[in-house]
Length: 90
Image (cartoon, rainbow, N blue to C red; front, side):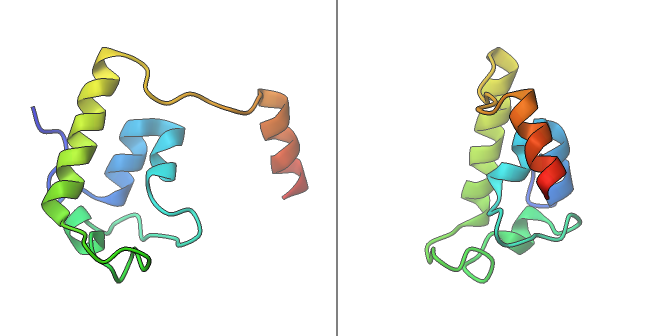
């Protein structure tokens, strides 16, 4: 079952995957949360890649969503204390 389509937004992906959702996009290049996957799946947004296809982006996100239904696929690598300390210093 396809959860994401070309019309799904960055915000849809971030909400579905929780804290890991924002890390599926480049963290050093902010994306408009209302931009669709069709709009961002190009080398203008991913400047270091030239062979990006929106349909493949959707396919990969749907694969990850299906895997997440079966088991945990994203794991935190920092403790709650480390995260809190980072937030306080920001």
